[in-house]
Length: 209
View 1: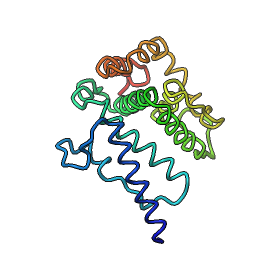
View 2: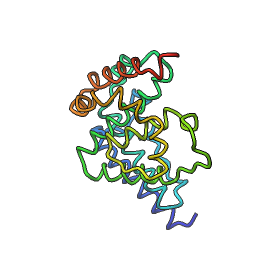
View 3: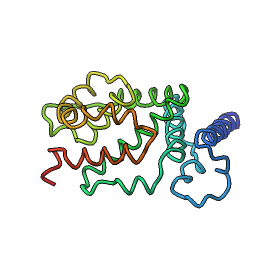
């Protein structure tokens, strides 16, 4: 790596960390933090593997997401509403991540832009040779697409729309009537998480587990 490239990466790392401090509302990230799980990602931003514009987009979005988690997601509330069902937990994790990212997007348009660019990048990289039945798409992957479409307002491409289509009626049947309530309560993690946990426990697709 050339000195110029190394210098640019270091400047980018410093810029990301400075932005993370502002977003997380925590200006002590460079100091020892007792909450190791939340501070780890922000204190160890890795820039060595950045080799393309897509890597910049990804790392910028991931850093924003970690900072927003620190600011808006309380671990005790998260655990309090965690569903018993293992499959439901995967969806609960996605719902909580989308919640604090959506709050960040409301807070700053630049954050919203970072997420949209990164998720669009992820969506456009999806490749599937065979996509014929519901079994070809996991419920977790489909739910993430559902949340991106309905809570992040990310535009899906043809392939992602087809992937979601296998599961969309199941999600709408259980979530649609609660959607306005959930969007109105993004700032209240407990109300939002409790309602999603209830929804997942009542979803027919998880009744056999």
